[in-house]
Image (tube, rainbow, N blue to C red; front, side, top):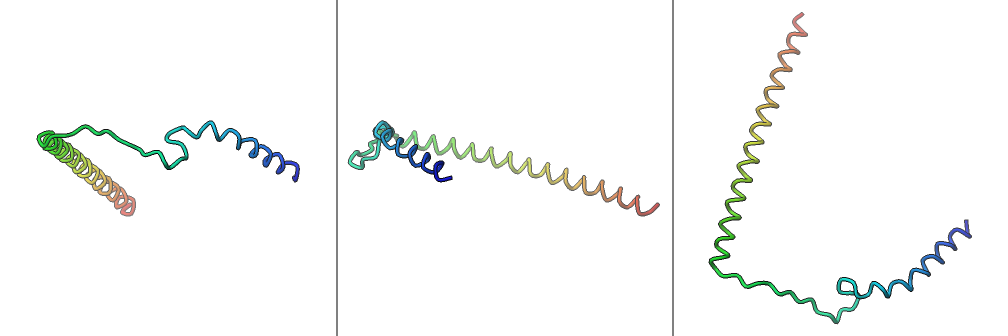
Length: 93
């Protein structure tokens, strides 16, 4: 057991030298670099159009959810009624 744990420790120690390769990946580890984003400027008409489109998409999604819920409730209710008729028939014979 002790030799196996020593192998793990030596393996981890060997990995420390490879850390330098990943310093400059995705910003690296230094905090002196400042992340800058260049977003395009949007006009008020573009924002209004986007707001309108998102509102329509949300309404369509809500209608789909409500319709699917109603269909599932009807199917569940009909399954319960069908199964209760079968249970009643079992007890009457």
